[in-house]
Amino acid sequence: MAKDIRRPIGKDTHVSRMGHQVPAEEEWRPRGEEPYAGPRRSERGPRKDRPVAIVGASADRRKFGNKAVRAYSADGYAVWPVNPKGGEIEGLHVYRNLAELPGLPWEIAVYVHEDQALPVLDAIADMEQERDDDVAVVYLPPGADTAEAVDHARSLGLYAVNTCPIQAIGHSPAEYPDA
Image (cartoon, rainbow, N blue to C red; front, side):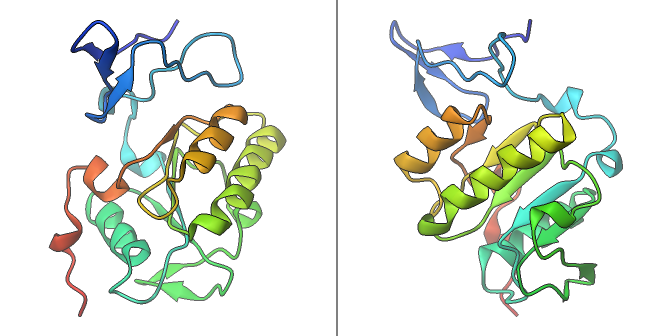
């Protein structure tokens, strides 16, 4: 059974591993029966072996999809940018969709507009089913983190976190200038 790493702060509220207040009864469940508290840094292993996909990656250095590519790369992750335009971003090959990825990423950051979030979540669930494995965490940063998207992710059995992925790995978007 996965260890529950939430900290109680009151009778009805806990602080999640990402520092967000969540209701005490809230449970995230992946495809199995056990509650899933999400990956801890100590469980991640070598980062080169744990790739992250950035859906909505952009060549525009002003956009957060580009800043995420740079932040994860600077932190030692193997980064798989995903954008329907393809090409290259920050020297990395860009995959046109999730189905083109060479394997199952450990984390997926979803940098898309809110009206595109649900189809991306469906594609993530399909990818998990096809590859018979789970993505550890799906980040829904501001813009993609609507209540509908979070509820949809839960209904698909995805461990979704509505926070900035750049901050989740200990960086700030301000560290990555627009120029």
